[in-house]
Structures are given as C-alpha cells and as structure tokens.
Length: 238
Image (cartoon, rainbow, N blue to C red; front, side):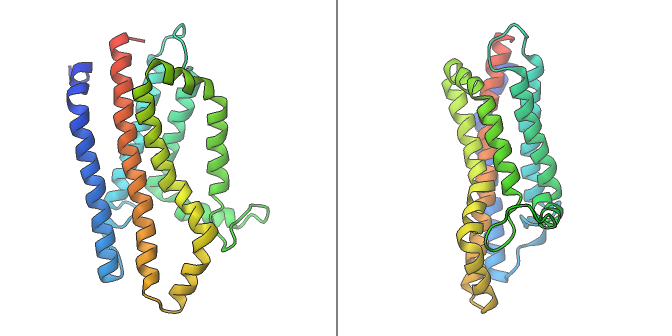
C-alpha cells in the first residue's frame, strides 16, 4: 500500500527537500518581481487571493490539520498521552488557518471587522488587532496541552523536536514578525512611503518575503515531523 510506514520513510526526506525548494523559489519570485517592477507578479503575489503561493501554503496547512485529525481518530482510548482532544484541537486550529490563508481573512475582511470594534486593542499605527486573538488562543492550547507535549517529547523526541520547530518557524513568520512590524516599523515605513522614499518598497517587500517564507518553510518542516509521527503510529498501530 502507498501509505505503508516503509514507503513514508523512503520518500519523506525527498518530499521535504522538494517542498523547501518550492518555498525558496516562490519567495525569490515574489521578492525579485516586486522590487524590480514595483508590484509582484499576480499569480505569485503573497497578498492576493488564490495565487500560487497562497494555494500552496493553504494546502500545506490542510495536510497538517488532516494528519493531526487522522492521528486523533487512530488513537486508542487506552493509549497514553497525547490525548485525543489535544490532537483534535491542534488539528482544528490548522484547519482554521487553512481557511484563513486561502481566503486571506487576516489581511482583508477580518481587520475591517476588528477595527470596527472600539474595545479591540490595537498597535500604535493601527491594525494588527487579529494578533490579540490568535496569540492568546495559541497560548491557551499550549497551557492546556503541555502534558501532552511533554509526553510526546518523552516518547519520540526527534519527531517532537522537528514538528515543534516547524510550528515555531511558521509562528515566527505568521505572528512574531507581524508583531515586530506593527510595534516598531509600521509608522516609520508608512512615513517613508508617503515621502516617496524608494527604500520603503524594498523593506516592505523584504518583510513580506521573510514572513511568508518562514510560514511556508515552517509548514514544510511540520509536515515532515508529522510524517515521522505517522510512521511511528502505523508501526505501533496505536
């Protein structure tokens, strides 16, 4: 069968290298086209719905979510941690990110809605309110599931390390760099753009490129880590 453990082991590293190559190529195309022409090629624009990199990243998030949900339902009730609810919660989170990525909610409809709420906290330059929703939600999941993470680390440190590394890298691109931007750079870059400083375009493009590359790269690493977990679960049949 296609999804036998030996088959996954054989091809997982090759697939990882292919995914990383795609991550780099998409990032380079976006950056070079945006800097040289002043606007990224439409089909390779990270900020455009249904563009190639957006669909590619969304598919990665979908696969991560599906892997976690499959792992949850294959788990026997008598098996030790991680708990089924933890796998389902994290899987549902990635499926939510899949929908958000595909329809670009946090860069379109969601900001408009959040900015209409007077009580919603904002950064000095305005915007970024979505961060105050995603970050607390992630922290809550981590705090409630820390025992599951510890159990995973003890049972399979390699797979846990690779998966967590991928999630952290994706988080850095999707949230942390945006946090830095909204807190320290947004006002300055806006002023530079309004004054006609060409450096503003390069810096803004570089910011988006790094953010999106880290997200895609982190997702690729996460998928590889989950493939190792899937192999272990199939071998143990738990």
